[in-house]
View 1: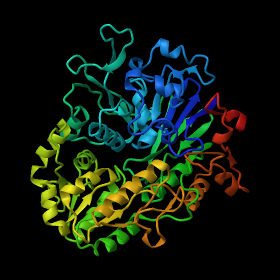
View 2: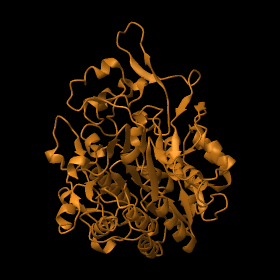
View 3: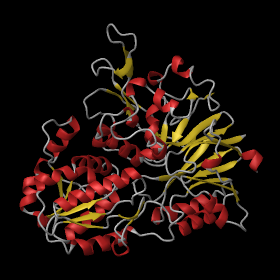
Length: 538
């Protein structure tokens, strides 16, 4: 019997964790961080205690209490004894996680799964996930590709110990098995990237493997457009019929080409994202280019381009603008590291060494991590300092965000400098606080901001009408969502990754589709999940 259990992504955007059970096969579609739920308890300086393993996350309901799927070094029988009376508790084994893309709201809590549970994804998603982990801060919430083993540290004269990372001299990092649905011909440099950690800690490497089944079930992968390369929609052939999981997508050539193939499967179930149910239209990346180029041509001084992390398509848009305005696009070391990893798989990703319009920002840091030192060594001839940029501001576009504003005192932007905000709107109070701070930075240095959200009334932020069109969402608009669903034409539609699940039922009346609406408000507070038995629905 085919059963679906939703442990996240219901009535919220992100946090998708969908358990699929069919006979003896059990797997998840995504296993991400629910930022809306996490932000109820944690922020930048208040984080889950890594020394407590998974206790904090299980206690606060940020992880479902499923004994058997999590890392042994982060849990114990003592911990599980606290949750065995929980209505959501069960013992579970899982064959895999089918990962739609590398954003942490879909991938982040793979970090806590048993290291032998494989991840199915595209090669590009695997490489992006590793590059992000390699170049990020050491954090047990972000060990998607490889994990650092933990052990109990019992201090002398104390009865209570905590978990700590095992010394690198005594234990290797452990890589998760990654199965890809399309195997690339990997160069020696690509193979080296995959089997090493930038810290120098030994890695128990598992090569990328090709697969077309999860457990006993056939699986297919379809590339789609989104705000990160490598995004995919999955289809799995269950005993009841094909079940399709859209992941996150927007309309584009990849999505439209895949849509025809998906429809031919005549799916029984479509689990579909619905992020932008309130948007009637979409801005294309080409429109972002046209609008941003027009703005950039007016700038007299430095240009700062602010767009989302790992938004490489937007980076390429600003590289194009830099070339056409006789400027150099300056990327941060972490961007250079990501571009390097992606270039192993995609020839369209620019080579920093050969591209005359690309430079790498030389941050003023006394202590460099090993990956940062490698970037400096590799691109030594393409490094550019704040002092050099300050002298020739009209020749550069900086890829910065709010979190890089502390570089401005070294850059000393001249009058006529421009901050182009090409990122998502403000959705919560944390984002509102960041936006207020950003505006203080811009006012202090007399930088003109374009495309910045403004607070039109308490807790409501909007981009001025005349400054819109500098950002293209990674998600389909409301009409595009309906077109996608109608083209796939499943017997059963289950919307997730949306704050308006009723949108689909309201707009698909008169069709033969059965829409199952999962509302967070109706969710059993004790169970904290939704279960759908497909046989009973059919």
